[in-house]
Image 1 (cartoon, rainbow, N blue to C red):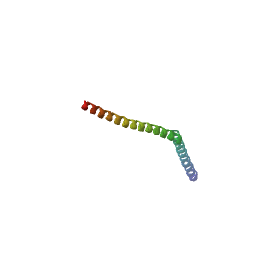
Image 2 (image 1 turned 30 degrees about the vertical axis):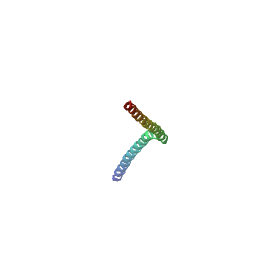
Image 3 (image 1 turned 90 degrees about the vertical axis):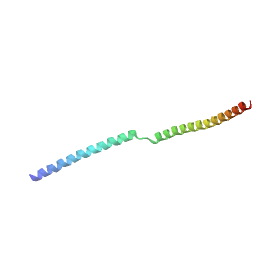
Image 4 (image 1 turned 180 degrees about the horizontal axis):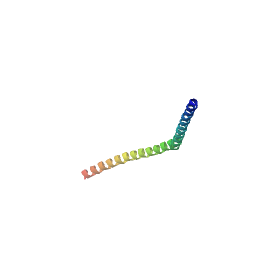
Length: 87
């Protein structure tokens, strides 16, 4: 009788551990599925980098134009000042 009780206890413990293990495996499977669904792919990264490069190019172009226009404005102001003082 004692052996049957011990055997039943071991079986119950094994069943409980099996259920817990199955639950943990299912949770890991769902976590992996979520990670795969939200993960950035190489193609996504390349597309983002291309947009950043395009934006950077536009900013650099704007900066160059601003410097040129600033230089032209300063030159125009100095010429206007010289004309006003000579008149």
